[in-house]
Length: 276
Image 1 (spheres, rainbow, N blue to C red):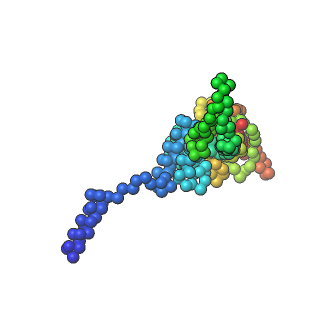
Image 2 (cartoon, rainbow, N blue to C red):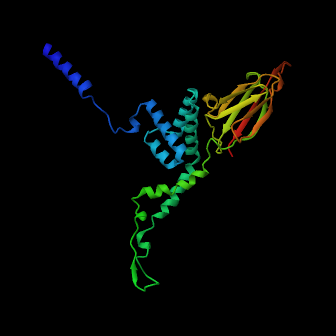
Image 3 (cartoon, rainbow, N blue to C red):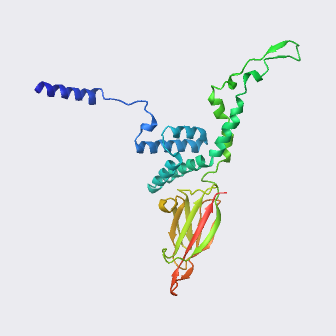
């Protein structure tokens, strides 16, 4: 029995201390959930610096997320809740670029596919106009279909057409709401991208005489990823803006409403912003 316990102890010591198992070259899909978040943040930071959406999409595919855009949006909300606003902006910007760039990426693949011209369609010999002697034409390496790096580089100029979180927002709708079932003075803000999809993680700035505050979309996903709200004080005039260059909704104040019974209460305002 003593020999058995001694052997077991020596075996565990060797396996855990002297020569523990080391996992190397594992795939990103095998990472723990929190490490996957770090991986997405690194991809988003790289995209913010290079604008290479093709490479970012390829790296995200290694995580095996069923819907990479939803995974990025969910992580952006978690980062906002943790106070990591800069990382949240980068992650949300990558999600927006993936969603807005799906059509652009499709057309880019079709255009670059024309590079693979059949070799039999190319001339193999021509006569020099200077010497009058036949010159052989050889196939150049960039035309070989097994060199994807050349094809990837041609997609870079299309990055400037993709909308990001820095693009201005337009105020498309302002509506007074008299609903006694809602909290008094409820200011509702809805933020949409150019495809009318709701956008999480967008900072909203509200100011009034002697004060200001900021809040973000996406904290109430049951009401929509692009939804946010704020309780207004009666008889206070507010101004609302989403960011530098966006439309400013000024003169915002809670309207006075009446119930069917004749009682007065403070109504609400609903603002809808959309990227052009």
